[in-house]
Length: 164
Picture 1: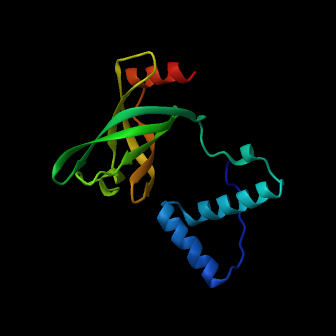
Picture 2: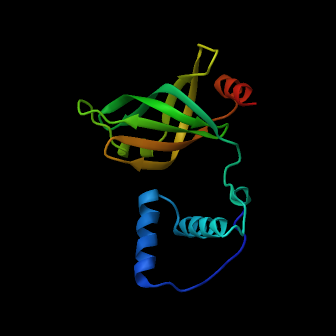
């Protein structure tokens, strides 16, 4: 849904500070967090439907498959294993489990990275370049929501055929 209306209002300092903290943690604009909070409240009151404010251009599909992520940091190229949890034509959500033997942090994933995986019933690899949009770092894993970048590659065409 397009944000095309402007609302100005006052809130208490502790509400404002809490919203700024959430905004920072979620790496989202404060206005986006306020929109989500208000939308959730209006859904709860059954004033709007969930589909009234979907931000994504492409529908997500539950998708559970292993993947390999290649990213770059000051010490060179790093490879991490990951699990794709959902996918769309526009992007992917991956979970990277943390292992005590290997250092995994969200810091290198703030830049573009490459992901390689295969689609069901097709053993050939799909290569996509991703740009992180949302990173959630927890004690046991790093979850990354990323948008696909690049154009109409063979991999993108394979993904499109699978999702349609």
